[in-house]
Image 1 (cartoon, one colour):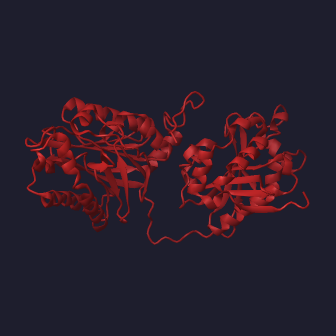
Image 2 (cartoon, rainbow, N blue to C red):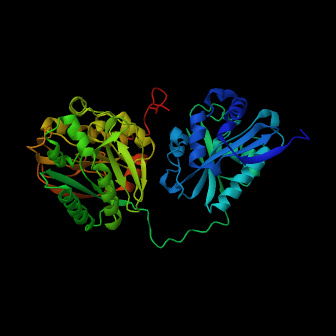
Image 3 (cartoon, rainbow, N blue to C red):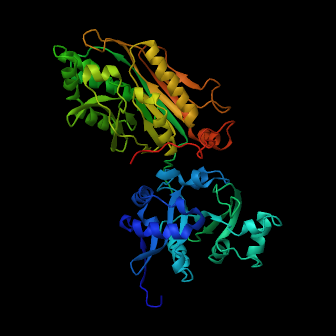
Length: 506
């Protein structure tokens, strides 16, 4: 190896096949647990600077993977899967304060060349460049099983520190200026060599300076404004926009962070297309969607409020979709789509389901949006919860009370299952001159998990049924963190991932 060319650089997706070979060789007893190409792609996409590799003569000899986390959000006894955020690495956040190491490995053929030290030094340099507090990770203690009958984990660690026992992982980490912060039980299920114990290791950045913030943008109490919209005939487009602005203005006066409009709230504009068949009329209504998007973006900035626009029809390719937009108060926006179409929407309007399922970053944390029928499919909110969603917004439209009950019951269930807040907003009233939209029933509400910190019935607030109104509700995000770690039940943590899991199709 004396003449080998060694290059330390950032990992690239095209390295994956070489990387896979090194992973399989490195993991030995866990050879089936190597990172998938999709996971490596996600890591590189989210945090390219945090993924290092060492290439020797064209082969990947070692690798170090990491993310940035807001460490205060995690219990000190966290599990590996919880802190990395699953296969989507949903816990990675650019504004975090800790570089969290999620893996380091060296191909067996290249051990003894001090490659691990190079990777650790690269991490330290990155930590300093990004002005992060520290590097933290959970370290295995693979020789502990040999001493478990006679030594507790603490005594084992003490003996490794005194060099009375050599542990290939812990001894190396200690020699690289990391110290043991804590011992965690059950950190990495299936690690038989360590008996599932791990040492929480930390390296402190002595050059770290706490950023000075003129404005604290991290909100823990978030105010939601829900619009229970009265269906009525408007003489023209401008009249509809005036009514939208009235609600945005009113809700923003109460310093709300979000305003939620219902599904297909702009249906009154279909009256002018009532001479057409229903499929043609909904396409006529879609001609207003782009204009409404620009109007909502303008209102979001002017009134300093994040707007969830409910939903509107939009032609996508040859098909009609039911879509909406998150318009942030900084002027940026995101699109979401209804994924599941009801039989009536398909038969009357020729609607097709979309394919966008995302969590969205906002200045009040991560949110999700599901349109009406979608909340009745529990897999969707679960995927969003695994990506860190705290608030789920559900714009809906139901004509009868039994239809409303389906939305309400499912929304309440999603709040309990996913340890999040769920806000639903619908329309009320009648549209006698619009086919397929004649009657509406709604009672807008905000639902919570059901535990001691929340209302006993899981209902934070409800509007008066079938009456045009706004509902203003404060939700405390810190209560969700407390529930997640110390709740009477912990639905997200206690799932039997050894028996089942839900994954997106790539």
